[in-house]
Every structure is written in structure tokens, then in C-alpha cells.
Image 1 (cartoon, rainbow, N blue to C red):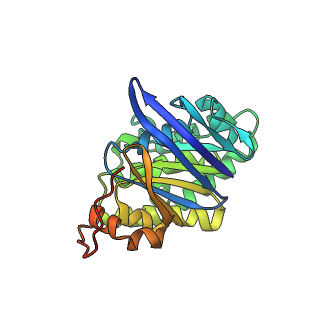
Image 2: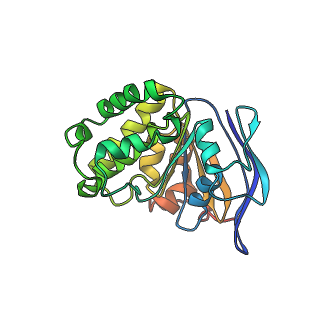
Image 3: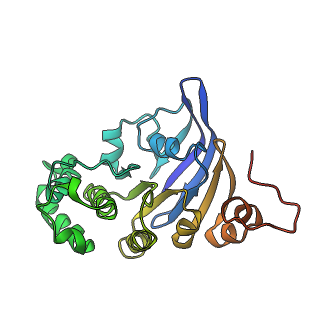
Length: 248
């Protein structure tokens, strides 16, 4: 469904992504984990059309979208829920949600209201505060609103950048369960970028560890959870083996 080959992205002279390769199948949840500065947000931004890669290709359903604008990427069915929510704080919850469907308004107007009802049912807490300004919501509620707004774009591929950032463990668990449900019940393909490695891998089908702009380790989520290098680097578990921390 989505294929990334030899992707290289720069910020000025800084070579951030250094040859990224991976593939996604429909309905799969891929976790991309790693420390600060590994290139995770740049990877999502490149896939979303925010950053133009210097080399490599992004193919979606056999169509190369490497040089597409953000608007065209969204129209193809790929949506990014950015880090730190970035909701419109002065607008109501309802208006924030409806803005997620702005690009569909003229050609898909009839189905927008049904999609809105479906999203509201998925987030019962938001249903109770549809007229409340987004800026008055708690961090967890704002994250649910950001995900709901993303879903209003009717994406086939939903990308999330650090959705657990700054949230309490119980809220993180709720959000991870919602993502898992989106894959299992709605067939949404999800790319989840996270520093909360354990939470991400518990709900993911597969995972990649990003280090210094390259994929250092990849495999099923269970393989990564049991990997001594991952355990040592992210869970604080020492290994009796001669494994070293994840580097490139």
C-alpha cells in the first residue's frame, strides 16, 4: 500500500534522513520509535509533503507521490496528526472537527455529516463538549480532538506524531486502544511515531527503531520488545550478552 525507498531528507545542510526503507500493508499499525533527534518527525513530515526529500521515493497504491504538495497528499488519503495537537484553540470542538474535512466539502458534502457523527461516537468525551472552545480542553481531550480532526479527512493512512506527549498513563492507554480499534475495525493504516516505546509496541503490528536518520532495527512488535538492544536502550534493562546500545 505504501512503499518508502532510499529516502533522504535535509534541513539546510543537516542530513536528517539517510536512506529510509519500509513498506506498509493495508490495515497495519507500524510504530516508529527512537530518541529525540533521530529523525522521526522529519520522516512523517516528508511523507506528508511538508518536507521535500533530496533523494528516494514514496509510492502510495502504485502511484509515486514523492513531490506532491501537502494538499495533494491529503486528498490521496494520507493525513498527519502533528505533534502537540495544534488545534484551533478559539474554535469550538465541533468546528475543529469539521475543519478536518475542508478539502472534501464541495465534492463529498453529503457524507461529511455522517463521518462527523461517527467520529463523535468514537470519542464520547468530546460529544459532551461540542460547543466548548478547543483551548479549554484538557491535554488528553485535545489529543482526541486532533485525532478526530484527522479522521474527518477520511484517511486511508493516518500518521501520528507523539500522541502520548505530556499525557497521563491512563489517557495514553485510552488513545492507544483507539488507534488499535481504528486498524482492526475500520481498516485504517497507521504510522505511529512515539518516544513511549513500550506503549507503541504493545499496540503495533511491526516496529522500526530510528537512530541518527537510519532504521537501526525492524521487526514485529514482539521481536522488538524482546530485543536486548531495545530493552537496554529504552527500558533500562541490562543484558548479559555483549549487545551495545542502539547506534548507527
